[in-house]
Image 1 (cartoon, rainbow, N blue to C red):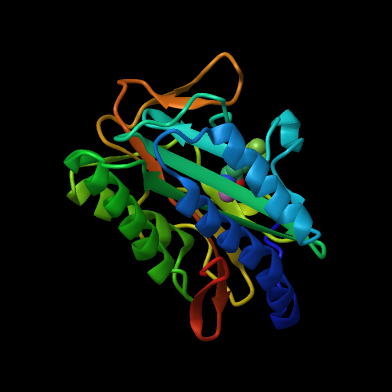
Image 2 (cartoon, rainbow, N blue to C red):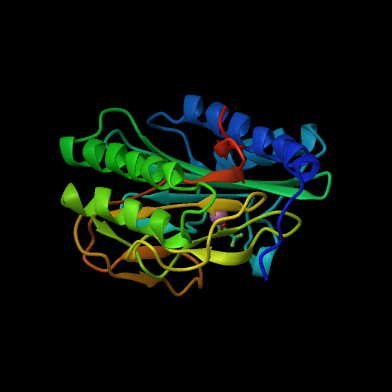
Length: 248
Ligand code: MF3
Ligand code: CO
């Protein structure tokens, strides 16, 4: 069942979403060669708690950290570690919080120091794919119009779309119906309605789309060792079109 949010509820969702986007921006400024992802995790948790928000991922199905930190060939759900980042790495950071009964969720991918040409293109195209999807999050479009727009932009540019993980509805729960795949034909799935709030989150691979999960039960990596990037926004479907609640 898809839970529609009233305008008042969407207003309340702005606070957790802003805490997430402001934290991600502060994290972005800290990402430099020599920094550890564990220090980013601790910083993110402090940012949330200082504002009376609760990190959403810590303890979720047993996930042990506040932040997901996925480096290079890691796709999503990487654990923060005390290994120093190197120039040329790419790092995806995914963060969510609970505040005033509602969740916000977003992710960005950042180049550490000087990224290679392919890495930079992958990051840029993944973010563009997210925005192509968001543009379709309008009343009377179908859910799969979002999916198809993401897929088409990624594949047109020679990259591939991860199938195993998808976006999701979000509100009083971190994960609500519907699932939001990043692939598919347009014109399918539910009609988008005013009051739907969706976390749209393309995971795009440099080479093949296949992934596998490490024995830690969480870290997803590319099967062929290629790079992977991830961007996510929490988006409300409103009478005035898509509204990005996690926009800074
Ligand atoms: N943004 C991801 C999601 O919405 C992060 C979840 S990590 C988890 O699924 F630990 F909470 F599962
Ligand atoms: Co999400």
